[in-house]
Length: 510
Image (tube, helix red, strand yellow):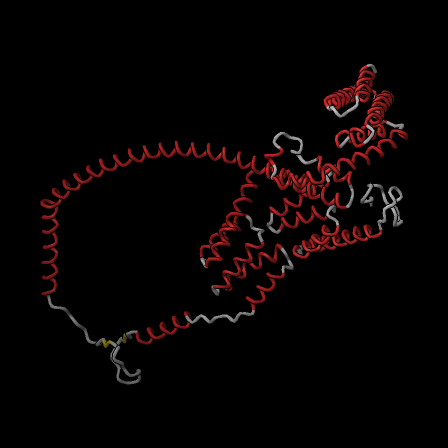
């Protein structure tokens, strides 16, 4: 565990041995954060995602820099279908710890798949449309839209729960049970899903009488069916009903006149067929041929018109595809800008928190890391409220940070003897110039920086000879920048300018 004020490693005592800060409460807060993280991890391992998310939110509430808790919370959100919230947690995590952070892997995996991002955007839009339909009472449209959403994002718990509610509203409890069971597969202890499931299972079923009515009608038809008896019997057989057909057992023969009638019908049919073939068919064929030719001409005209329309539509499709690519590029650019702006707002909030805690060095690092603070379009890129808030603390933070950093750098210069310690001293002295060099003895600052550059170069010749020339090149370049800055500043003494120029000449002559 490290000190919240100076960053030193803490011992078992309740005081920091480096800065003397009381860290007893801080240790308890960190312990609580880690305890909630462990509980969230245990819940996530058994797919109790809602409880896991609750514990992890408590963990980062106690310690916003708990990277493990924040990254796991992002994974839990992603598993619940909340990709936007997951991405937000990973971006904040990466801002707190830019290096050696698994959040970087998660973000790159999402950003490297434009199709996945497009699907996420479509899911959000369609889900909002479905909510609008549900609020307006258009339940059928809401159900259709939610099915599209869940087809794109099957893990979206909110979508499954709303779909179940819509089915329950219309009384279709069998269908309502399916999305509830899908939620419980994703989040095994989801409170709302369990509540809906209990409501569904406690609902009394409706008896379906269709089958009984069908059987009843069938039985009635069977009982009313005409029964045929092979012979007439007045003895042991059952009594006859009005639907019985009596077939007498004596023979029956038709008259020979029936045969003659059948022959007459056959002859009439033959004569009719012959008349149709020789008189009616040729005229009918000619009429059909004429109509067929007209139809062919009409169809050819329609085909030519359709081919022309297809050509026009293909041209418009090419234009639309080109426009789509341009819009996608604009969307990607806007998303990148929005992500950068969100990160800058997060840095400013962190700087304000550190400022209130009087951690001026940390606050200055957050302000200096705002991407566009030194860019020409700073005033147009950021809102007036953002610039005013940043300007309110920037001067004081930079002044105090320069003093604190200079004090640490002097201690390093006085005790440094390795390449790593000289490198650390150079970094802190250069930060003094980046913050507010006028708030300290800048002539001494230039001399200390010259000493650090020279000693670092000499150490590099023994410890890292291959890169010694690069250390010299960096030192000369940085000292040249310092000479340019203080020479252009009318408030800097001429002796300090002369000191910087002599230091530059000495570095060039090494």
